[in-house]
Amino acid sequence: MQTVTLTALRQNIFHLADQVLETGEPVVIERNGRHLLLVPERPKIDWDKLPRRNAIVGDPEELVELSGWNEAEWHELENLDGSGA
Image (cartoon, rainbow, N blue to C red; front, side, top):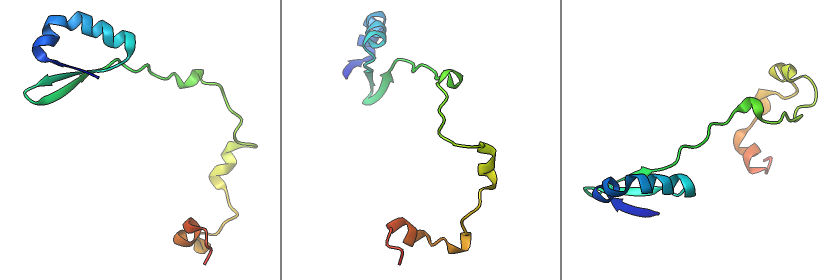
């Protein structure tokens, strides 16, 4: 990452902004021993345009009322380490 002073940023702001947008590489701006980052904005994800996956077989609403395990039988540490003891 390139590091520039605030004075260098002021002198080259358009060039540095174009460079960050082109490469995606942030530029560190140093001011009194502290740092700022000039970074490109990440594109927002349009969740509605993602392809639909058939990861759940059946009716997803049935998961709300899922049964078949007993909370009283759940022993977290034993279940996490896989020993079952």
